[in-house]
Image (cartoon, rainbow, N blue to C red; front, side, top):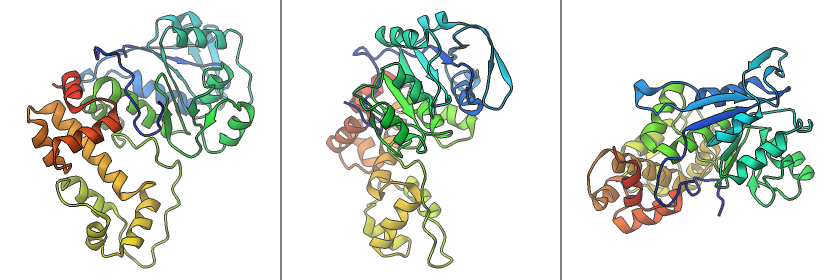
Length: 331
């Protein structure tokens, strides 16, 4: 079952961590920013912040210089054989019209067949599609290229506009910064909320945006000089145990419920209910990891009311129960 809003964690039944070795795969025509996203997300030593150190490498069809879309080259030390030991393979943006270099498709298929996970950033999804790995799966790419992806690869279930799609073994993300969200999503699945938040803090980005959030948000022009929803979003995050229905939030924002709901979607790309539920799950994750409080207490603290409601939303968002999450990620 695939989902583009926090789908099932890609973990085994024994809940052992599977992410230790990460490889970025590049060739001529790689986009340097999207390549840098993979390097920054998985290649930086953040052990002083409690983040596990991963074995990160860069490979190409042949070792040596690889030319970027901006004209400069990067020196790549490894060939395709480096993919054979990778737990996660990242494919940054490439020129969508380019064919796969010799050997790349076979190498990706072998890695996928042995269980390696794959993540693409922006037009990197075209490489995964060309290798036949996205057939029958939901996937996304930069909004400028979604029609092209769908036309060239009709077996791929292209989901336009979302930030990223998690289909289990393969994660595809949209343009530029959406790749950061997808990488943080993988960190969270593998190591939990605290580690993902530590990575995000060092990168000075939000902990993680929903995968189903819109790639671009048409912010509504205010009817007057009213503030944006920033203050009320901060208040919600600090008061999750309160009644947070549209009517009460609209009253706090001095808007009608209809205007508030429309403004909320325009500014966040999602509905008030979905955003609040997301914040409650995130806070529950933190409490499950960092405290020994009973699940019933945590459910009330984050606004779900009782353990059954927390379990329902947690299973829907994370694919495992609060107790199973605690067993895996508790400090």
